[in-house]
Length: 81
Image (cartoon, rainbow, N blue to C red; front, side, top):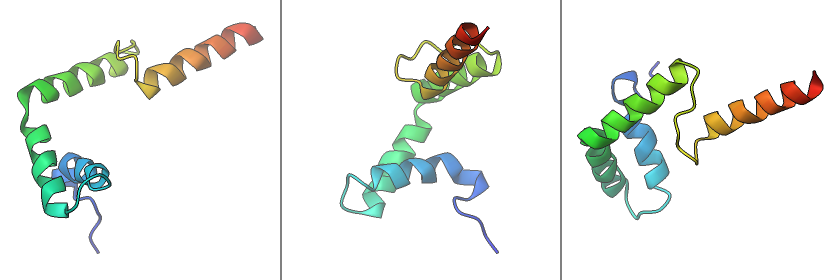
């Protein structure tokens, strides 16, 4: 029994699934996803965001759902105290 996406190529497969909603073929979706996953700038940004979240700090991305949820949870805790 295999699991999808494969653990050794999970990021590329997840990106391709999302990209495939907007392009004509899986081949194009995988080509775009492959370029994204190989980009050093994107990798550094993913690492920076992950490190901030792991440290319990906001990552600074205004569209980050994780940070929004954490801020909302903190605001709710403060108002209930």
